[in-house]
Length: 67
Image (cartoon, rainbow, N blue to C red; front, side, top):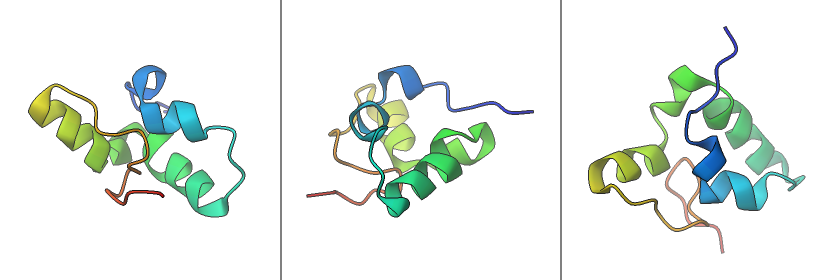
């Protein structure tokens, strides 16, 4: 089954960085965004679920803030 995170269409990180060619960002997409099961470990998703609001767009799925 090839399910992706259900929040991709509204995820500021994914939308802002999806064209980026940085290997770290591409790896995060593959690990978290494009795998529903792993997306449950996404720090962005955890914050959004807990607060009802998305985190800042430059926060990656691991919780790190990209400058």
